Length: 238
Image (cartoon, rainbow, N blue to C red; front, side, top):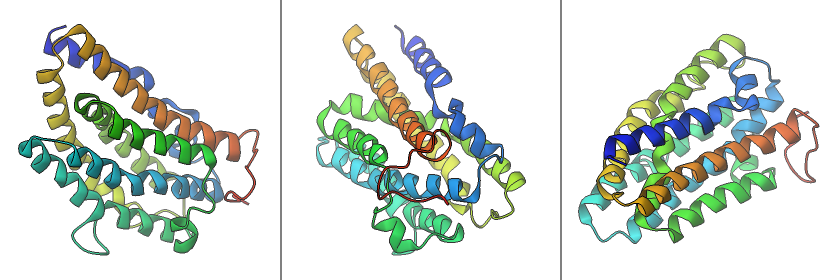
C-alpha cells in the first residue's frame, strides 16, 4: 500500500473496532449507568492510566533514536506531570475522588477486575517485546480518542447529577495531547511501514490495542451490567 492507503486502512480499523462502539460506553455516555457502575469504570480505568507512563518509559528505554525519545518523553510529562499533583494520572485520581471513591481503594488496586489487569499488562508487555514500529503503531488508537472524549464529556455532563466539569477535568487536556501524539505516530508508521510484512504488522498492532480496550469494557459489562458476575474481592458497585 501507499502511505495514504495504509493510513486509510488504519482509520478503517478504528471505525470498526474502536471501543466507542462498545455497549458499555453507550450506556456510560447515555446516562444509563448507576453511580456505582460509573465508579467501577473509573476505578478499573485507573490501572490503565497508571500503567501508560510505564509503557511509554519502556519504549523510550529501548529506542536508539534520540529524536524519537525527545518526542515520546512528552507523553511521560502528560501523564506523570512535573510535580506530585500534576499530570493525567493525578487528574484521574481527582476524578475518582469526585466520584466518592477512597483514593487508597483506587491506588491499591484491591478492587480491580482480573480481566482489567490482564488486558493492561498484555498491552505493556506488547510494547516491551514487539518491534519499535509495532509498539508505536499500537498507540494509534489516539487517532480516535478526541471524538470519544467529546461524546463522553457532553453525555456525562448532561446525564449525571454527580458529574461536573471539574469532575471531568482529566478530559479537557487530552484532545490536543492525543492529536499531537497521534500525528507523530501516524507519520512515523507511514514512513517506516513500507513492506507488506511491516504494514500487516502495524495493522495487527492497532487491532491488538483496540482489543485491549474492548476487553476492558467486556469485563466491566459482565461484572456490573449483565449478568453481574463480580469476581471475588472486586469492587462492589452496590
